[in-house]
Image (spheres, rainbow, N blue to C red):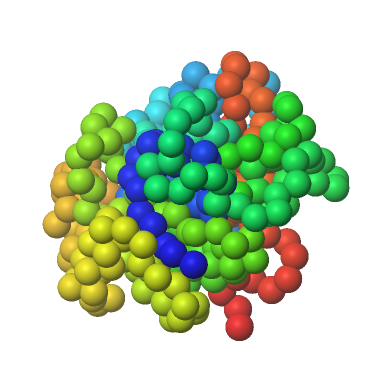
Amino acid sequence: MRVLVHSGRVGAEIGAREGLVTVIVDALRASATIASLLEHGASEVMVVETVEQALAEKARRPEVVLVGERECLRVEGCDLGNSPLTGACPLLPAPVVFTSSNCSRCCVAAGEGSLTPGPSPCGRGERGSAGLTPGPFPGGRGEPGSATSRTSGCRTGAARLFIGSTVNARAVARVAGQAARELGTDLLLVPAGYAEDETRFNLEDHLACGAIIKRLSEEFPVVRVGNDAARAAQALFLRAGERGLPRAFLRTDHGRRLVSVGCEADVRWCARLDVYRTAPALMEMRKLAAGGIGAVFALPTEGPAAGQA
């Protein structure tokens, strides 16, 4: 089993096209926020790409909690902003609709799949999944982590899809590594990066990928680092060290921006390791009231929590 790193929406589309077990990594702050919301009782978190889609879902389903962020700030009309520290709020438990600057785009792209034909940028000629059977799973919901389309009834996109970062590095390493081993696929980490420029290097996302790679190597000694981006992420994390993550996150471009708008506590929280013992898993792709699709994440209900021995 190899672990690969490919950034942004292009990386998410690689995971979809190749049928890889995929983890979306948005270290500041969406990965931590989604994990926190689910840990604090959200029945599901439906990730949508646009503010218009989110507001339309709220109008159709007034009971949902709306979480929205653009340019680090809460979107007007949303109940909460993109902060892991607002997870323990009186609005939960309830279903959540979530939209953020770039993590949302990556989640939807990985779940729905790319429409762009052509050879794989991963250098593989066929999907990396083994023995996948098209069609819905029993109960009308996808197997945890799988992308089962509610509209088409066929499974598309990544073989399994999870959300991870430093805050649940060991948990996501365990469940994603186990899924990749069972399916015979490689494991792809997708740093969400910057929405305005996906070619721009994002340090905190790669540090978080390095933390997940470190936990993968501890849980699955046979895992191999499969490309230069994964080697770079691994080296960055090892250089920073576990104790150095808060300082490293605070010194990133995005970390400094968050501090400037009063969100230093968020940055420090997101730099913590293994706070959460579970990994949000894709359950289904759902048609939206305003058009398009949303990626519905929840915590797996079968077996022990991902972080338990």
